[in-house]
Image (cartoon, rainbow, N blue to C red):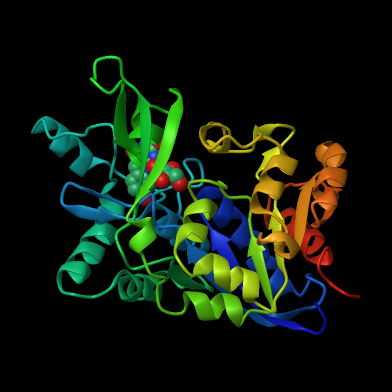
Length: 337
Ligand code: FO1
């Protein structure tokens, strides 16, 4: 990468991606990212395969987590939903005996889902709805859903009571009700093969100066974005370098459930395992660079041998400053001084 970066594109899941974006935005605005203009435009392509319909409402957890985090409306402890939330609607639904009771929509959060659902019912696309919601939250990035089509991740788990020996649950049931504590046997992303990228997504990748894959879940967040027909090809053909940051530190995920998902798709739970799963652009993959944690320095040789520039640095996202420093380390891998 040579010259000043004016356009950054990030492929993001929920919490990990949102935390990364907070730091990236901080670094851009503070001018602490070498080679990046302080007015650089950041476009986020967000995973929408966690989305589901609940109580008649369309809920988009990753879009909302990014929007609320960057719009300073997130609950910082939970990492999802609104801060200073109240739960009257949840309590009233439970009093009516309405299931599922294990998935909670807070009162403030419900307003977002009501606006979204009304607009979708009126014929607006998810991209248009997201743009409208962002007018309130002003996240300081252009937030795009990966697709406007309905795509939902489902997980097959063992069920001895079923004739097939398996039962398929929505991703949210696996994550929230089952707490990812049962083995995920298969991951099926319903609707993915027929989905088309949302308006602006392919252009954001092919027209970027730099593309970043943050430490989001490589299977059910980044993996689903890559699975939208056309997106992987755009990443492979973009003139921009593509650099990623490992969500695995020391053979464990930092947050979320990357371990369970990697096991389900037969990929080694390691920084090198995820980096080589994404693969080098020189070898049918998507990465030019891959940043791993300092404790995974032993993985650098494997990743480098696969044709991906790799270094080991502290992967800290303790606050926006350390996250921005981590982003700078990642960028340095694909920057020509
Ligand atoms: N996560 C939970 O653990 N429990 C919940 O009741 C819950 C509700 C919820 C409502 C709206 C929303 O946008 C997110 C919500 N989440 C909840 C988080 C969500 O399940 C996930 O963490 C992700 O989909 C994974 O990124």
